[in-house]
Image (tube, rainbow, N blue to C red):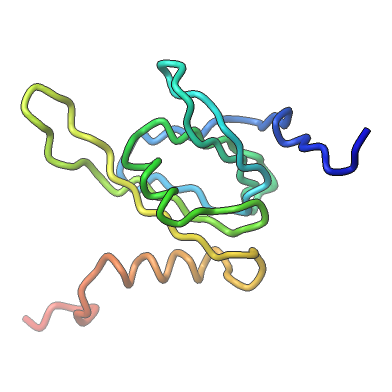
Length: 135
């Protein structure tokens, strides 16, 4: 058998990431990037991410917003990634509101720690204001 055979297609994780509440996030190192299926059987990106707790979690990017955010960043195997469910977008008439996500990728893994990624996310989502109110 060839050494360049992609076993990632057959990898299994210990669970799937669900995005229930704004603030839910997943941070870790990407082990596998492959094509998966959304709830309707349509093809979509699927990642297996190893967390700091050595848990392998599958992320199926069935939501259009998450799929677009991942496509913008183009994460690859070995990259460090942070995916956060940040809230809901305004609903279109007659539809449920879409979930909004932030995706941060540090290519090649390594140097960027979880704390670094969380701090960068906090700075990106809050204005530069003092920690305490002036009054």
